[in-house]
Amino acid sequence: MTEIDTITIERAAKGDDKAFRKLYDHYAPFVWKVIYRTTNGNKDAAADILQDTFIRLNSSLKKFRHDSALSTWIYRVAFNVAMTQAEKSRNNGARHVSDDVTMELPASGPTAEERMIAKEILKSVAPDERFLLVAREVEGIPFEELEIITGKNSGALRTAIHRLKEKIRKEFSNA
Amino acid sequence: MRDESKFYAELAHVPEMPDYLYRTISRTIVRRRIIIRSVWSICSCLVLALGGAFILPAVQSPVPSAEIQTEIQEMQSYLNGDSLADEINQFAYVGE
Image 1 (cartoon, each protein chain N blue to C red):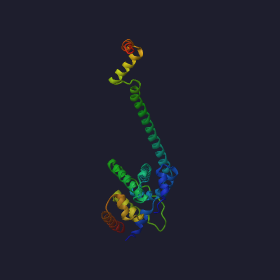
Image 2 (image 1 turned 90 degrees about the vertical axis):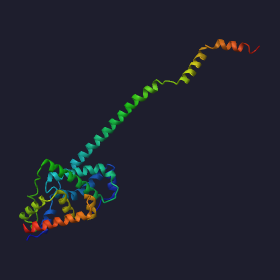
Image 3 (image 1 turned 180 degrees about the vertical axis):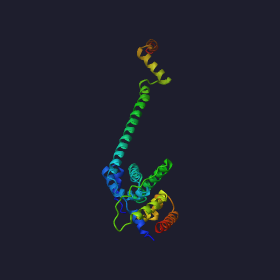
Image 4 (image 1 turned 120 degrees about the vertical axis):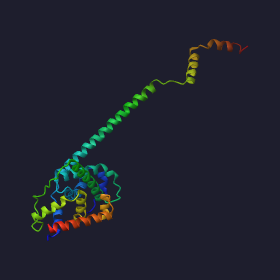
């Protein structure tokens, strides 16, 4: 992902609404992809997480010291918000309903049956692992950045990804 | 055996982000900003009001120290001419 220019970040941090809008337009679609899958296709929950992420970002952007890429920082905020939300949902006993069953896919893509199997597999995976899987395997975020985002060490992340890919290989291929 | 890449294709396929999201974010940010500024204004007013309540009475009714009170009394008696008779007696012999 290309990063937005420093001037825009600084202007947004000072409360410039246009700069903040530019920042949102640049980063939100990437965050949305990861968050949507983390919530296992729950559009409302993903929308709540994305909103909360950017509201927090707006108030804490002044503290951003350019130690890492801004995208890493935004993903970190999004990850924390998503995990808090997942914890709340678990405590409330809420069940997420996938919204994307009717979504159109290109003819070369997975069949309806394959999509259902993929969803069933994702349902059995914890939200933090779903985040990790999409961030790594779909968005291609490097492990060094994932360390910062999730607060886990690289070794643990590599093991988790390996285990997840094994699970997917077994369950998806043989289902 | 299913092609595993189909799983990742499904994982990557995500619907468009809803348009209304930024409006909600923007509204919340503006609302928060107004609340924060109002709280600051109220706090500033309170500080000014309380500061005034403590400082003004002290300025309006100062209590001078005992030393200054004696000085003032001496100055008052001098101006009133209380010690005039003594001074006349004292200086009456100077010319003699």
